[in-house]
Image 1 (cartoon, rainbow, N blue to C red):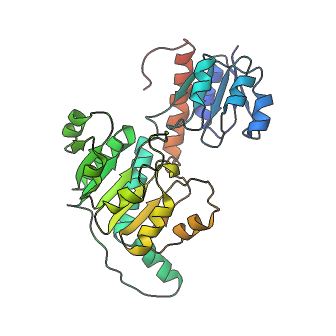
Image 2: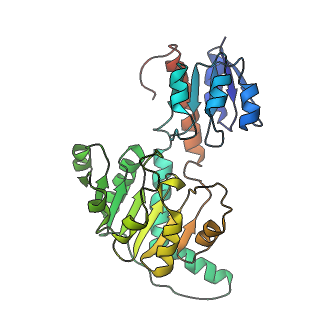
Image 3: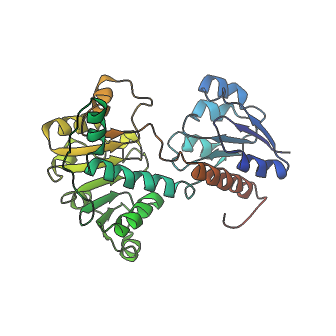
Length: 313
C-alpha cells in the first residue's frame, strides 16, 4: 500500500481516485511548515502540495520512502527539483487543469483595467459619480510573454475578442502561434515594444526572475497596461510602481506578488494605486479548476508509479 501525505487543500475527487486504487491518504494541513514537514514526511511514498507548501532540500533529504512529489497546480518553483532528482524522486504537476481558469481571469483583468472599472468602483464607494473614460481591447495589440499552456489559452481568448497578439518565448513556437492567428518572436523587446497590453505567463526560474524590469518597462509604449498572473518575482514591482506614478504605465492588474500576502510598504502602495486592480492569487480558484486539478494530479501520480498509463482525460 502506498501512503500519501497531503499538506494543502485538494479537491476530494482526486484523493478518492487514489483511495480506490488502494492508497492510504493522510491530509495534514498543519504539516506545510518546513520544520514540521521534515519530520512528518517519514514513511510516506507520495507528497501532494499546492503553492503554500515549500518542498525544500532539507525536507526531501529527510524523506525515507518518498517516490513522488505532486504539485496540484502548474508551477514547480516551490519544489527543489535538483534535490528531488538526486534522490530519484519523480515530480509531477497538473498543467492542463488550470489553464482556462487563469486565462479567464487574465481577460477579465484586462477589461477591468482598460475600462477603469476599479477606479469607478472606488469612486462610488466614496459617494462620487464619475463617468471615467476607458478604452476597448478589440483592435489592440497584446504581448503574451511566455507561450505555454496558459499563454496559448489567453491568446485564443484574446483573438476571439478581436485583439492582435504577438507571443514571446525562448522556444520557437512560431507554428503554434500561426495556428492561433498570432505572431511569434524570440525577442522580448520586439514583443513588448508596440504592445498596448502585456501579460506575463513565464514560470519562475533564475532566467525569468525580474524578467520585466525597469529597462524593459522603459522600452514599452507609453500608457501600456501590464497583467501579471504568473509569479510575482518575474517582474520588478518597485519599477512597476515607479512607472505607474510617472504615467509610463497606464494601468496594471496583479494576481501574484513576491511575498504573499503582501506586507512590504511598496507592495501595499502598489496595490492601493488608483490604476491598479489587484487580487489575492485567485487565478486557479474556481470550483471547476480545482476539481480538474485533483483528478489530473491523481492520474499523474498513478502514472508515475506505473499503475496507470496513457494520457489523462
